[in-house]
Length: 475
Ligand code: UD1
Image: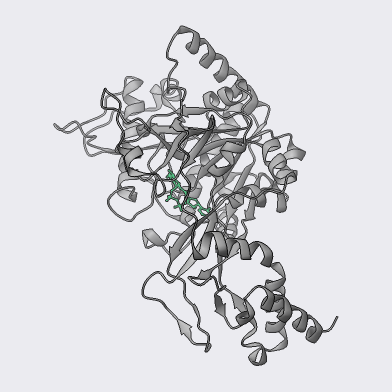
């Protein structure tokens, strides 16, 4: 079929879906540009886009908050009674067994850039560790290596990038020799993208022959795992459970035997870690039960009255916050994809540089268009069973979202030091502290030395006496 014929067909199709402007610069394009533009348009599901424009772009259907919304229940960080303590013990043994049998894989979603940090590059390559300035990727890779060593198991590592930072992320791992991991056990893949729209529902052009699009949200992980062969790779390896986290959290316990074990014991398909929120409007997703199903309602969509609601003892009614740490069954991902996976879309009003109708480049001063994303946690209500395990903020959550202030790099560094000090003290090591109780030295513990307080006890003879203002790195 000639390009001219394809052009005519495409023109007709776009007219039918009110997106004819995408071919406005056809006469100015060379052959390669024409092929490229036609290829991009062929990728678009215009019928679906009509639906998105109607429901998410033009008049966004306000996220219907079900009246049947009740607080979700969770397992506590430690067993609540003797019976639960027995179950937790069983779960830890089961979890360790599954890791030992290489049934668990690590998956980090790293499609985000370091823009909010003022860092030009993949957020994963941002240096954060207090003593050695290790990057997020290095910390995670060393944790995977330490788990492999401890359990004498293969722990494959899957890294989701966006098309924007795929090449740079791949080069970061290659040039750092995969941080000591076996290259064949590191699988870097790209998530999909979705077109961007103006407020009238017109798809924006990034250039005369280029549709403006952006990563499809971490909900896109579930589709990308299948489309890129990652799931097949897991299947070949006998992996059944995926330990999922976001690249922005350096404290995450990547392979938590208790979490994996409770998830498996309860035969859940997708489970989550939670924290007690520090305040009603903390910027975390909110765990609820909707029609009995575990559901996360994002902080930006959660009604204030529900967020502020308190129990007689003053605690928040909806107190469980999502920290974007999940265990997902490989089979669950396959099941979702076999049924034609389509998670709800969330709209974000963003600043989107584009080409205007006359072909002029527009660098908008403020938000001028719509980006659509799907969220991985919207798969939770689709799971036949889902559990929630509360964790401890100081042990497991210090996301790096901003350059300064809340959720900043400095805060994360300090939390890494405080956690290390806590581990050492719980093993009987004296850690210098200032009169206000804050740690008076800089400590960094490599995952290869300890992944938790229990590992410290076995290495007390390798820990020197720590003096005030010391800089200690244990590896
Ligand atoms: C996110 C969660 C929120 C949770 C909080 C915990 C969403 C929408 N909200 O908030 O419920 O409580 O983290 O810290 O996620 N990412 C991709 N590809 C994408 C989009 C995001 O890989 O297309 C990754 C990013 O690398 C980032 C992470 O997902 O690390 C979170 O994305 P972000 O949009 O920053 O969400 P938050 O507002 O931080």
